[in-house]
Every structure is written in C-alpha cells, then in structure tokens.
Length: 219
Image (cartoon, rainbow, N blue to C red; front, side, top):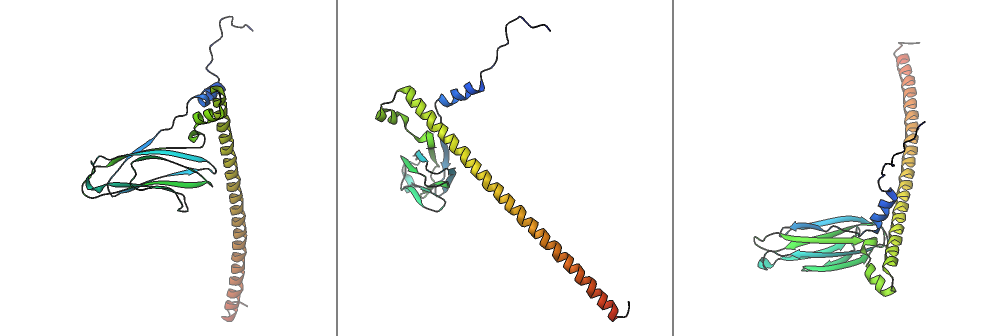
C-alpha cells in the first residue's frame, strides 16, 4: 500500500464549532408586520411553554391623519379567555407577562372607524424564553463581565433546549399511551364483534332449521 505524501485535504468546519458559533452569535427575532383594514380584526396565535417570560413591542401606523375617528384595540388572551394584556386606542407600546401553563396565546388587533380610511400598518415583535431576557440589565445588576453574560445566556439557552426535549418526550409518551389504549379498545371491540357475528349466525341456523321443519321441508 502506498500513502500520499502531499498536503492533506482541507476539511470543513466542525459541526460542533458551527453550533457553538450559532449559539454565541446574536439572537435575531423577526418582527411581524401586516395591514389592518378599518373595522376588521386580525389575530395571531402561538403555543408557548409553561413559566416563560413573554415580552413584545408593537407599533401601529395611522395613515388616515386622524380622520374617521380611527381607533385600534389590542388584546392578548389565553385559550380560557383570560385577558393578559389589553390596550384601548393602541398606537405604540410594550407588554410583558409570564405564562402559567403550556397554552395557546392569542394576540388580537381590532380596528374601528368610519368612512374610507387607508389600512393601518401593524408591526409586532414578540419574544419569549431566553430571547425575552434583558441580559444587558442583568449584567449591570449583577456586575457581570461580557464573557460571563454570554455564559449565562448559553446556560439559559441550554436549559431551554433541555426543557423542550423533556416536553417532546412527555408528549411522545402521552401519544404512545393513547395509541396503546386505542389499540386495546379496537382489539376488544373486534373480539366483541366476532362473538356477536358468531351468535347471530348460530341463531340464524337454528331459526332456519325450525322454519324448514315447520314447513316439513326437512325432517
């Protein structure tokens, strides 16, 4: 066997290194923007885990110049209808709340006005979990160095990932239990149906036998 004496081929970056760079890099959250016609209502829904901080900022651009008495209401509710945040005549602001349970949360914008008014531009930026924490403020309060701040952020991010995996495992176990329960019920129903069919067939045989004997078609 002969080995190559030339320089080794260059390899790409290690996947672990790429992951580390991704985690160390700044976290970017894209804002959602949409147009809200007058006298209409638009809602955004998102599933969020338990005990997570949720923060958000919104800005509503009024292009009507104050005509038609245009007003926009903002309301955030959970699946049970509990109001977590509400703002009448909303234009620009921020909100924050902590989830008490894993739930579907709904953010609704409702526009009310009269006449022909241009659509409003709504910009919404929501963050939750690690993204919602203000690490600059934490660094000032706890007097942390930049590297310590990054380590704190990575620790929180790792904990969030572990919690996500634990939740997915729990959901998988629940789905498996549901499938096993369904299979057991189907099996019992199949056995019950089989006995019913056997009983019905036996009854038909005896009934026809008595019928034919009564008609003296058989002995």
